[in-house]
Length: 170
Image 1: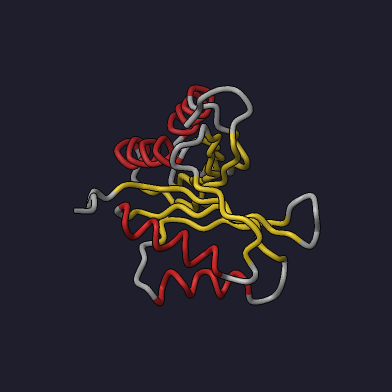
Image 2: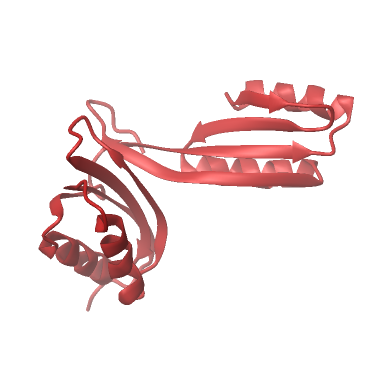
């Protein structure tokens, strides 16, 4: 019997940098009702090739199906399964905290220093912070800031990942 345990799984794809490829790959996920947690894409050092990082929440059987179907696509050059690899995986996130007092802003600058965030912008009553951490840590930061401040706005960019060189990092 197959293992039906749901868990987050990462895949990296090298694909042809052509119009419609992103749509075709995201269509594969929606057409088969696969759960797509995040999909990030950008060109590589070769302008004819893009690299996608896909994070999905699935069981082992579904994950194997996803990889097989991606490998069958003509536009897909290479599929890398991150499951058993040491990977450096990060996500960019912006959080805007609104309706801040002077004390709130002072506290936010301290929080930024603690979480190695960058203060990207600030105004009379708002602060914009940038975080680059794992998706799990960014989620924890959101929960913390929601518990401390009344008005926050969150934008997450999706995870990007690459195989580690020597260190077993997750």
